[in-house]
Structure formats: structure tokens, C-alpha cells
Amino acid sequence: MERINISSGNPFEPVFGYCRAVRLGNQIHVAGTTAPAPYDRENAYEQAKAALKVIQNALIEAKADMKDVVRTVVYVTDMANLDEVAKAHNEAFADIRPASTVVAVVALAGPDDLVEIEAYAIVNEDKV
Image 1 (tube, rainbow, N blue to C red):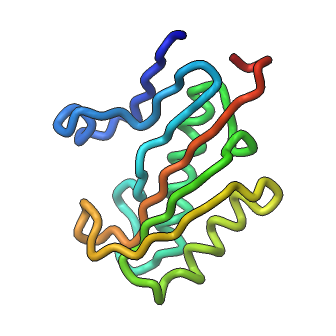
Image 2 (image 1 turned 90 degrees about the horizontal axis):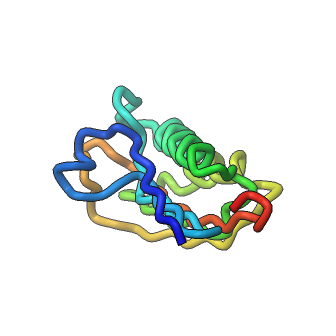
Image 3 (image 1 turned 30 degrees about the vertical axis):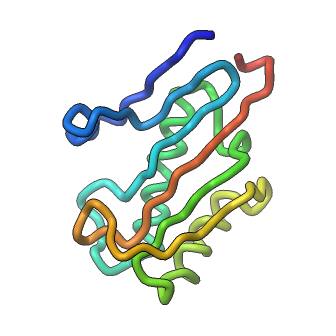
């Protein structure tokens, strides 16, 4: 199977030694994704929407789309923001309804990051 690494161009990728997404066969793993700068430091909904857009772009580059997502993991720094994050997640996945886990964390890599989302997708064989 061919491995395809997808970069978002984030300058932290080569420093940390990772890529935005990896496609192997019909599976795509999208790394934990936060909103790219600039973003509203206090708006978890806007940050979640922006992170989901980055995920969508990575999936498109991997010849997939949001409907191929089967699982997400959502990290939040404050459970008081969960309703706003859930709203953005629901807007992106309401008809798809992937399995999802929410994890409360003390902090994320960026000091102003309120939410980070990772996604896993499986594409139909005709897209392989």
C-alpha cells in the first residue's frame, strides 16, 4: 500500500516531525487540529469551525471528504465551551454522525487554543 503524507504547511510540522494527515490504502488519519492564526482567542465555536475546515481541506487533498469520517476525538480546555464546540461539530457532521469522544484537557499546544480535533476516515474502495 502506498502511504501518502498530507501537509498543511504548518511550520510546526517539520519541527515536531509529523504531517497533517496520513492516507494508507482506504484509511485516513488526520492529526489533532487547532484553528490556524489569526483566530478569536475566546470563541470556542469559531476555533472549532476553523479546525474542522483544516480537517476538511486535508481530507480533500487525500481524495476524501467529511462524509468519509468515521470517528473524531475532540479535546477542550474548558468543558464550559462544550456547547459551542458541539454546535460546530454538529454543523459539520450532523448527517454523518461519526463516533466521537470528548476529552477535557488542562492545555493545548497553543496558549490560546480552546479546542483541538482529530479525525479518522475510511473511504470507499472506488476512491482508493
